[in-house]
Image (cartoon, rainbow over all chains, first blue to last red; front, side, top):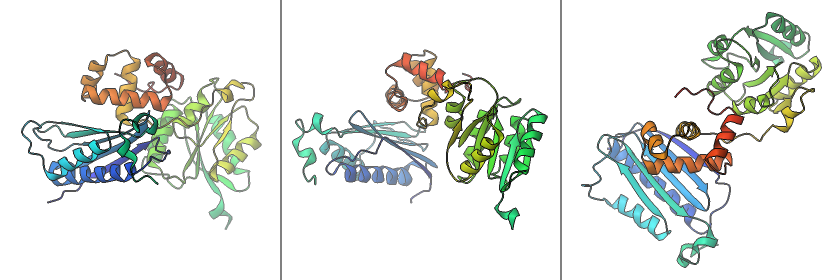
Length: 128
Length: 218
């Protein structure tokens, strides 16, 4: 059963358009993480930060819920899909949690085309 | 009919003569009237704690007892709607006061050394949504030091900033704020970027300049 929570949304420096499908993918990742938090965390506050700094789109999603034991978690489709999406974008995911300690998820997605196009040429496939 | 269209003004100053003088200037200007006054920061907060209380524009002095006008401005702007405007006023010297007023979400800064017509004009303009800065004409540095509106810092960002400025290590900051080293480092980088700081020392200079850690007691 899905819970309810106050979601605070903060963005910084997002005035530059990111190329390709990064924006769409980032939105889906944020949606999935909020849905997960509402479904499982029993949090009543969720904070979402999206900052664009030094060529990296940094997403931080923090909740004050029950957390989970990260050593014994069996990853569901949702978490695996987030890792897969981030990986496709050349990004990284870090989960910080513990039982009773809430959960904070850090996602970094490179958006600086000069630095990343060479290393990951498929990143911008589909860019208009 | 005129009653409904008058700009409703609140005046806060610890000097009774100033309150009376400003009230007289406002009440004798067509289109505005004083609807409330206060003599210290706590009284200001009590007046606006539940919202604008029907006030359109508040003139708030910086140097008031109990709570200074800058702090009071930040507090009341956090609970009032966007229609409610604040003009910070002062007769004190201080090149950073206009910047600090804006940082505390004031809509204007007017030196008490300005002509009465400039003060009433500022009230009209701020009520319409303009940001008005009228520094002390004898202290042109006030305008030179005026920055763009500083980016807003989230509560954890303010905490980390002030701990960096106080010289705590990354590990100590993480422990004090109750977050991981990774998170503390990310917050530090975000704050550096938001404030345009080159390094921790520069962060300290900026925090000092704009009084970003002044209200903290760690």
